[in-house]
Image (cartoon, rainbow, N blue to C red; front, top):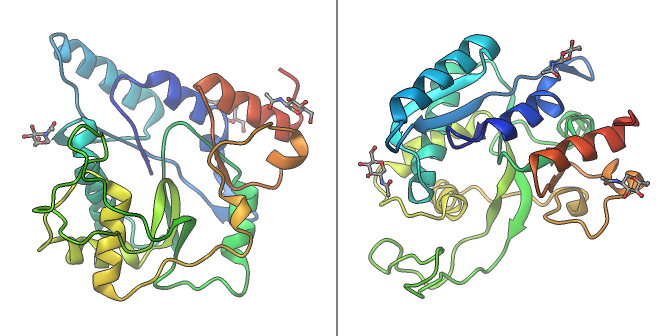
Length: 247
Ligand SMILES: *[C@@H]1O[C@H](CO)[C@@H](O)[C@H](O)[C@H]1NC(C)=O
Ligand SMILES: *[C@@H]1O[C@H](CO)[C@@H](O)[C@H](O)[C@H]1NC(C)=O
Ligand SMILES: *[C@@H]1O[C@H](CO)[C@@H](O)[C@H](O)[C@H]1NC(C)=O
C-alpha cells in the first residue's frame, strides 16, 4: 500500500514499471495499490478527471475523502489499515511503503517466508528507539503535549516502509479509536502497538531496511529490502541496476 499525493503521477509510474509490476514472487501473489486523498487547488476537477482516467487504465488506485496533506498522513495510514482489515482479509502480510522508495520484493519475500518470521502480531522495518517527541513549534515534526503527553515515543517502525502480518490492521484501527491522532503517522502506529502490547521486531538483518545509501552499487542494492530513492528516475535506476537491464 503506497500513500501518495494525487499529483504524484511520475512516482506512481516509476513504481508501476518496477517493483509495483510484480504479481508473483517466489510463488506468492503480490499486489501494489496506491492510496490518494482528495485533489485540491483551483483545478481540482480536472485533476480528479485525470486521476479517474489513470484509475481506469491501471486499476490500482484507491481514493479516500480526506484532504491530502502532510498533517493528514496519519488519517491516510488509518484508511490504509481499515482498507486492509476490511477488504484484504486473504493477505498474510502487508506493507506500507512511501512513493519514493526502492523495494526489493525478492528479499522481502525471503524474509516473510523464513520459518522464524511470525505470522501474527509481527511488524518490522527500520526501528526507531527512544525517540524524544519534538516540542519545537516551528518544526514539521512538532507534536503538542495535548496530543501526546509522554516525552518519548514507544519503539516504532520508520514510516518510509514497514511490513506487518495482516492481523494487525484490524487491531491497530481498534486501538486508534480512543487516541487523538497526531501528525507523525509512524510514531502514532507505534503508540497503537504499545496499547496492544505488541513490540516491533528487529529484522534478522536490520541493514536490509535502509534510509539513504551512500552509494548504490549493484552488490549492495541486491541485498536490501528498502532504501530511499531521490526521485522517480532513481527508483527506475536502482531497479535496473539490480535486475541488470541496462537503461
Ligand atoms: C509489467 O510487466 C509486463 C511483463 O511482465 C509488461 O508487459 C508491462 O509493460 C509492464 N508494465 C509496466 C507499467 O511497465
Ligand atoms: C484533514 O482532512 C480533513 C477531512 O477531509 C479536513 O477537514 C482537514 O482540513 C484536513 N486537514 C488538513 C491539515 O489538511
Ligand atoms: C549501479 O551499479 C554500478 C556497479 O555496481 C554502480 O557503479 C552505479 O553507481 C549504480 N548505479 C546506480 C544508479 O545506482
